Length: 380
Image 1: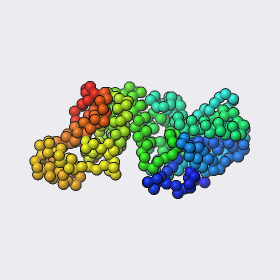
Image 2: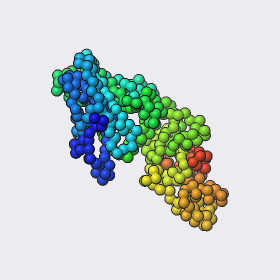
Image 3: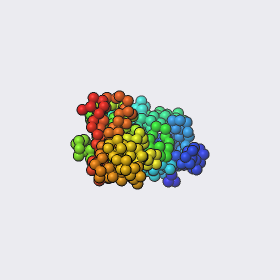
Image 4: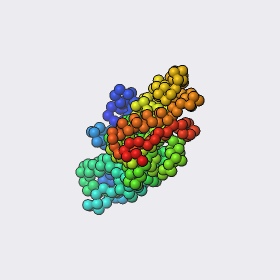
């Protein structure tokens, strides 16, 4: 079979209030594969489907896509990840676990197989040199190994090698290379369940990016809305790759985490329209969750010297870029005004943390169309 089955409630189960179908993390898939493989190694039979218990008590069952048993040596089981209705790059990936028995007292040892990355930089919740199997999935696998051992007379001393088919290729679309996780994907998950469009994985990657940068001694980070803004801040400040945070639409996630884990300076760089939303007090910049407020832009323009007629035209503009162009033609620095207000909103979220902030607004080609000075936190 090619897909994990749904948790109790059937494949049609949906999240309350959303109508969207949840899925399973790579950590859940690896736990299911480990449970099946160790069971086969001790009993000679693969449970299919294999049921596991998640950290919050849910008991999903997973169909096996791969079964291989060499009695007395090793067993491998594989599960195809079903991410539900979430647009997850690992949806459909085949997660395998190979289990070998170790001498009594060895405990549970984790290895990175093909397609699973290895940690090469400090700052992550795993030591350098460790396979990128995160702490909660490790705990899940340890607990399930102990249960299988108790049921089938094993010692629970095993080596677990987790692999993901084509994982190294898939990982190029993730944060892993920037975080110093090389060779493949991470095995992730804190609840075992993928909540569609929760964006929790992206936000977690932002946090890990801050951790890695701080561990590397970086004092100036940049939260960028995309690759164009990244190129702009590199050209302006010469920042290294590990100082760049791909924040996407999650300005609030960057600011709140940096508030708790401060650095000397944070530059926020992004498209004018997106950063006008931050200037207006929105911390989620996605078009489905916040809109460009042209009335707000008109107020800024008026405060910056725009005539009543120009302010009215700004309020009626079709797009934020259109408003910017109207002001530029009249010599009103709307881009700078937005950058300053966005910086001040960022400082408000930082709540006095010792972080100096500046904001850079760009157009679609990456040209700077607005810029603030550095302020706050012992400004440089």
